[in-house]
Amino acid sequence: MVDLRSDTVSRPTAAMREVMKVAEVGDDVLGDDPTVLELQEMGARLLGKEAALFVPSGTMSNAVAIKTHTSPGDEIIAEAESHIYYYEGGGYAALAGCSIRLLEGVNGAMSSRQVAAAIRKAAGSQSHYPDASLVCLENTANRGGGVCWEQESIDAVAQVAHERDCAVHMDGARLFNATVHTGIDAERMVRDCDSISICLSKGLGAPVGSLLIGSQDFIDTAHRWRKMFGGGMRQAGILAAAGKFALENNIERLADDHARIKRLASALNEMQSFSVEMETVQTNMVYIDVDENRFSGAEVVDALAARGVDMFATDSHRLRAVAHLDVDDAGIELAIGAFTELDES
Ligand SMILES: Cc1ncc(COP(=O)(O)O)c(C=O)c1O
Image (tube, rainbow, N blue to C red):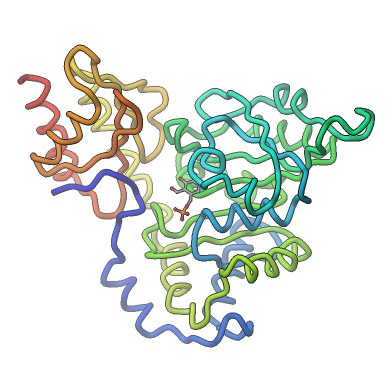
């Protein structure tokens, strides 16, 4: 069996469970869980920011960030396929009271010109427009194929956002997949971002948790919204220990996931029934287009499952495969074999 549905499915390793077992804990809602404090310091340091906040999920991290940066009635700007828009239940509207301006980017990345043109303010519009106050980026871009933003684009988008009085939030659920692929230091990558969310429970292999990272002032306000969203956790050091272990041990090995997905993508691209845009295969995921004349995405998912390979269909003729800690070379070969059988059927 190989589970390629998402990098969220990996289970904590024996070594990770060991550090969880012996973690020193306190009551983090009261601010005295030493392991949570260490994890937060570690996250802030890694990204060159002042402070960090441990939250239960990437979705909550983004929601708290949006709430902290905006006021009700504001507008946020995001890419049309972004996770914040696509998969977070409209939290920007329900929890922060914001509208969203969607921009169609390339593989999940928007240009600074697009962003500059999209930012609008109430002032000067006879109050017709909302105040855009936040620009959200996603690196790597999930529905963009796991593609990494160009550093110049991050810098340029942040510059136009700041010039027009907008904050910049980076949904870096897979930021370290981007740093490993590009070789760019994490601190440099997010230099101009006001807040960053990183997920510990995806490629990094922790069971639960994300870090929201930014200035001390930003995190102080975010702390209040985390409380109101119900994200305060008590003896969370057990989870934070896994997060620390993940940051210490599981960043560099992301390169193995990237290599395995490249192997799968190249093999698929040789087949008649499946194709892949190889230039988008940069990190730990691949989107696979299925020949409409042969199968639907759902048919392929069922046929693969019968052969011990789990994968999601993301559209009627599109599948996604994601490598992670629980996927080894044999798992990739199993998947290639299953696709080959289908292709030749
Ligand atoms: C880019 C991106 N952001 C945010 C999230 C949300 O993370 P969580 O599932 O922990 O809420 C995900 C989850 O897959 C994601 O891919």
